[in-house]
Length: 296
Image 1 (spheres, rainbow, N blue to C red):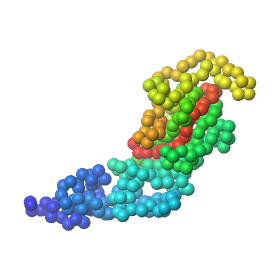
Image 2 (tube, helix red, strand yellow; image 1 turned 120 degrees about the vertical axis):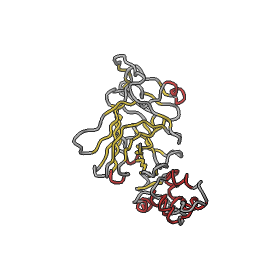
Image 3 (spheres, helix red, strand yellow; image 1 turned 90 degrees about the horizontal axis):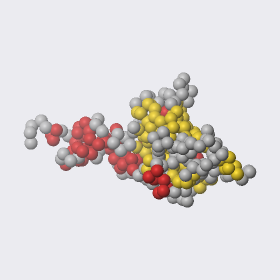
Image 4 (tube, rainbow, N blue to C red; image 1 turned 180 degrees about the horizontal axis):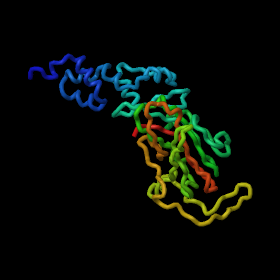
């Protein structure tokens, strides 16, 4: 062995060095030698990669059984692969695998949904594939509007976050989602300048429409009280006019709502919103799981 090489360093010293790198670098270093493998498994390393408030996060866990882990690396892996429920089960938190930054999802119960407490418009039910106990199913509305808020102080500092609406379509199909784009925005509450508003479509692209049984838009607006169609000026949604949802690896879909930079968590609350209130037509068939905030 070459004199003065890193192989001569004590395991604790190597662990301290690895703790100054990244989770990915620590995992790669385990391939160097057995001493590096032992050092890379050390709690000294993985405690540095965990959020500084990880003990508080665990204490907020909403589960009939406590979060159990035998090492800090195991806890890190658990938070990366299986987000835990917190705050009475209405939010979840996980970690981004490659850098340990926090990822949050605000469950539907924690969102402000216009007409969300009216069974004729929205229905609350459980889905086995949802991480939350209840999701919000869109029964039938003209005025579609959802807001969510998150304190920036609990997010990872010096991080650009993107917000995503996470949803799926009911079995049997949805309708009214491609007539007019929805407006989404992300902004700091009380900020001097409002967040940029952008257009998105909540229906998939044409190649996905048959898979999800999306009914093409109807010609006009159906009035329940009078039982007839109100004719509208002819118009069609144009491809490329707004972002379309993408499939996630967990069986849900998502559409990006916007992004923001979290400097030190001193900007108070950040608010995410999605609404479609201009078309005046009926919409149905969405199942909302929540809004996710994750690092770029």
